[in-house]
Length: 264
Length: 317
Ligand SMILES: Cc1cc2nc3c(=O)[nH]c(=O)nc-3n(C[C@H](O)[C@H](O)[C@H](O)COP(=O)(O)OP(=O)(O)OC[C@H]3O[C@@H](n4cnc5c(N)ncnc54)[C@H](O)[C@@H]3O)c2cc1C
Ligand SMILES: Nc1ncnc2c1ncn2[C@@H]1O[C@H](COP(=O)(O)O)[C@@H](O)[C@H]1O
Image (cartoon, rainbow over all chains, first blue to last red; front, side, top):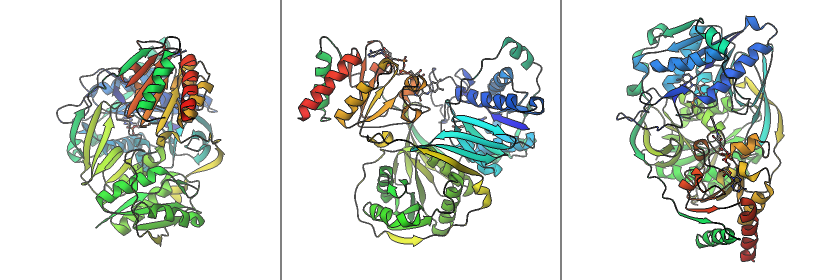
């Protein structure tokens, strides 16, 4: 069985994130890391491998599309236990939106070949559109089972549990398919020292767009199907009144505030 | 005027509030055509509702054949409607499901997609709030038929009588779209409180509740509010994940958000920072949540909330 997990390199959420002059997200000037939400995807891919009848026959490939430093995201996945890595790196990709990114990811998944399972995180911690998995499924013409909190596989059968707005659903599908997992699916493992050493010897391919048969003019900022016209930094919220509760004064002040705003 | 397709958000025919918000926004762009994908016998009920908010047309798509097959068939339905009606835009509610439908649709019709809009004006030009609400972005789709998902509470629903001419639409659904199916479903018990994403007031609790959500619930009920939670409260098993607010939970934008025993981590802020008025009760005066608030109480929520609940109930008489 072949599993591809899509991992994204994102600016550290605790750092300062901002827009560059061309209105794209600054992914260079800020320290980055493997999106924490994609660690859950790597974890689930590894668990599926470990639980398989013959784990040796399951190959987990970590795939990223992004700038030079994005290779760190793949490395982290290799350290956690993925078998090989693929980094699609091409200057033309800069500024790509979800539509273009999903195209490159789809071509890369096809390049890896005979993939049974594509595993994604629930959303990027930076862009956070949560649409790449669905777009990838559309492009690969595969079923999607997304936002899984519990994942079970048996042969080529996949069952997941997910919380929808009004119910908890169990969804079933047959591989090949695209799966996305939530942060409820279980803590991701830390790379062990052994894992870190082993990762150095694992194959890591860097592919360009031409390796994938994607034309430079199909991706990037200039062909984005949407255009940012204006970005405005929100003025920081000005702090309002803060009172300290003493012998019940807090409750009264709170009630007075709510009443003054007509919430009562 | 051109049609604007609006996908109706409903549960078994009961139309949800975001639909009216979308119809209100759609009227700024053209003539709203509501799309009902659901049980045929509930179509007239839904039609009555959307008529009041300006739907000129209602496409009724019987879902008996595609029920349980999640998003892929719905994307095919919308694709076929786009081909038939050549609308100027497609508006879809910004739920997780809505975004997935929109993602698949955008690829199918080779059109640009904008997700999580908080406003849509003529153009259509959308407004989004990004980076945990720190930036506001105005954007436009430059290719194809704009597909836009709109967050709940983005507009105040305005009534306007529409013609609501019903047109039954028989979509042809491919077998490929039926690859994933709901095999079991456990409906969540209704709490009797407003739905989190479209409530006017949200009262939420975090680790600081120590697992005592009773005080949060009673306070919420006094205000007629929905109840929410931080991930720490969810991870502790105190409240189901469906109540989580933040980056990996729900995004809310109510008139009033009251955070209790919540520190205000960036991932939590991502889900509530655009609330109109923010209030916090926290015993630590250094808690980052206080940076955001219009009003804050430094104190023990177990003391402040029950007393406030009592006073509110008294005032209401
Ligand atoms: C990828 C990722 C995604 C995440 N997604 C989310 C998300 O969607 N939503 C989310 O909420 N978090 C999310 N988190 C977690 C987030 O980083 C915080 O850990 C979490 O929000 C903390 O919850 P909390 O504020 O309840 O707990 P804490 O940070 O522990 O804060 C508890 C607060 O309660 C106060 N307190 C304690 N006792 C009392 C009392 N008696 N009365 C009053 N105040 C009291 C304390 O002073 C403290 O400020 C995510 C994290 C990651 C890495
Ligand atoms: N550039 C990328 N490289 C690899 N995987 C990605 C990339 N962008 C998105 N993904 C995958 O798609 C998921 C959802 O991303 P998004 O739709 O951007 O919120 C992520 O959790 C990743 O698994």
